[in-house]
Image (cartoon, rainbow, N blue to C red; front, side, top):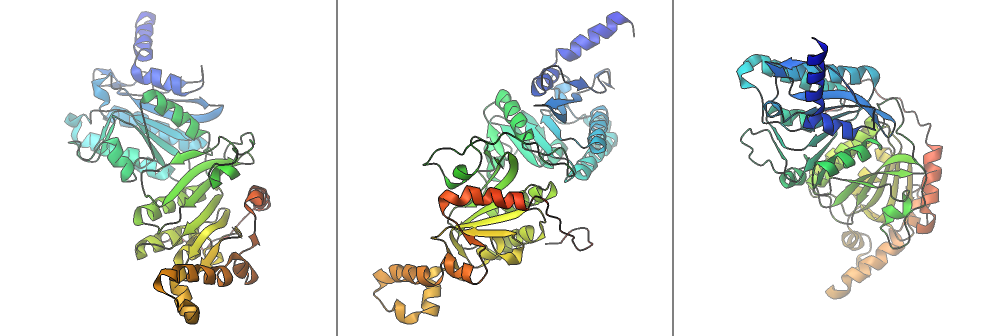
Length: 436
């Protein structure tokens, strides 16, 4: 290739939307492209891939190039992505994929299918070893969608499409958010790039290194939610709010260190919420991120939800700190805050209630004489019974709560526990994984 042609090809690549996207995603002047001159058919490959840094952190990334054959998946694109994934696995750095494709080059037939299968195999190998983030900016259908949703977190723009159905049925962003496929929906590509950069800064490079440290900031002023009062100010990254309405998950920092936050909101935990929490706890466990649980719930709406979440907590060996901030009833206490599910430290606010069944049922069973009041006063009588017999103080006396902490003292207690548990090591039974 003569110099004139070389410069022409380089200019064509640099002028593509995918190249400009990645150059904007990485820190200035750090993007290094790999397989830049790879061909697909008679033209350049339908994706741009390479590595660089995000806020100084090493990251691999690729972007499907809608300027070339609509970004269609091909055996050449699959080969480029395989090389990227293998480098990420060797060096232990996150992978961020930007998806925008009309589909695949179907004329390549089984060669295309084989390439897609190999890409999916590598995404599975990387799962739990290095973090993966997918950003869907346009169409992402068929096997492309399967690869995208295999990532730990999926971000979508409002006008993007994500579906296994190549016709695009049930593919819009809001549908995917409500069904747990997308953790975050943003307005446009510019905001997606910004959010992807922000998310990467909460993630460890791999499962053997800690998450990047940040500056410790004072929590936000009074009047904010309990979580905001205890994490470093401005450090909360919201995830999957549209999926599962009875629980919340967040990445945040406490004392500059990244933690996973679970918060139940005083209702019965539904199936989607249990699934969301279980997946998040397993992610945190894979990358040794401490899980801090703020528990306030009356139980589960289904047995399968209870089993799924209890199993995730019980199997996780990362640091687990629970705070009962309201009611923790029956299976909800066992799963989220019980020492039986391997919580390392359990705190409770002074007004917390810990009960084997719902408060009114407990009162009728344990103090039937006290409940012989008119129906309109039974809730009040049950609450009085709970405060006297099912309080955090009672649980602490019996060793089921490690400490009763005032809300103003909670952040200091959590920071102290995180510091104490930083060196936690837990041997596990020799097995591949559980089957629950």
